[in-house]
Image 1 (tube, rainbow, N blue to C red):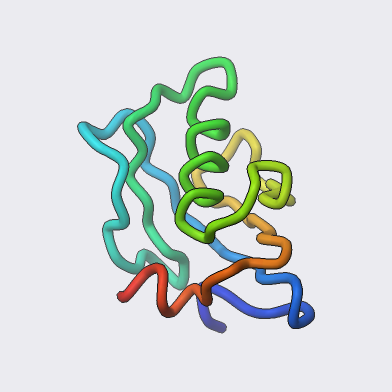
Image 2: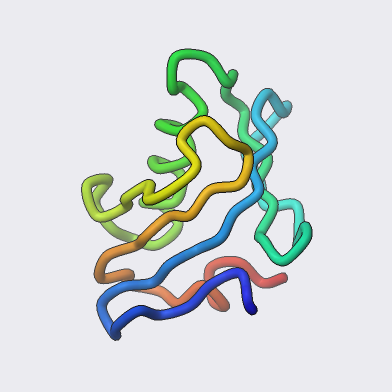
Length: 95
């Protein structure tokens, strides 16, 4: 299984491995079938989740409310849904 899949032409699902507390927010390659993203936000009070969703919205050219955290709010492994992405995951994250 890939780190992303399309549930429909208007909905892309990403499987992510998150490393909060990094020096800067960046993609770090693949990690166990998931896309690894380092976040420059602390894993406190939902700060890392909010930073992740904002980062993904900017990457895919969508509004923040078009990025939905489906699973893993308290975990490093997360499933995120992008609604009506302007760009494909292959174009955004060249891993």
